[in-house]
Image (cartoon, rainbow, N blue to C red; front, side, top):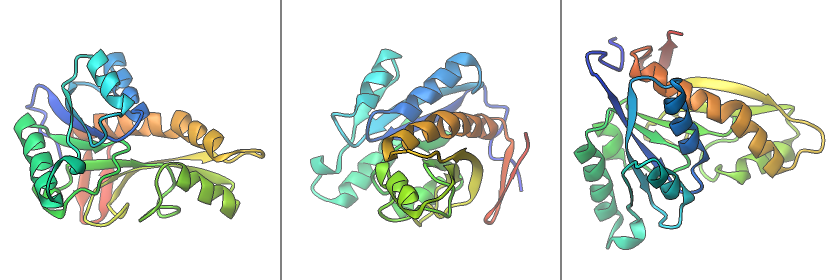
Length: 218
């Protein structure tokens, strides 16, 4: 199966969808600036939350950023229409969900096959699926008493955290960890590393998908 990116493209364009503080967005911005993510630009940042600090991070770098919230539309279908149209109008090659708490509609998954990725703060299949997001993931991990957690970058399919896995990185759970402490360690040691890496790999045709199997050339 062919690689996911055509390297005849001069610049690989991504849209980053966020709901909150945008720490993973910042990691992407910093990785582009540092040359860790190459030949890539953030063409658009979208948030469903008008109070998201992620929007300020985008504006500080002169990245187009806007709010598309379900609350502003008469129906979920109308929101889905607006979201998909805006992404299509931006002409992006990849959609990156970086803490985006709205479900991606099935038809958008169909329109962007193997071109939507998500970062999840656990080692999938542990602590994932419906209801597992943000601090809730780390609360459940600590309640279970696991010794290792981490983060996963995966393609988005029509399930919740069920798409093919691209990269994972393990992080140790330490005595005395609180959900917030563990969250921060996983961000610093895993999320902020593997999400930029995955984007760069995809942008340079190093990721191939065959059904549920992902092959990564590093």
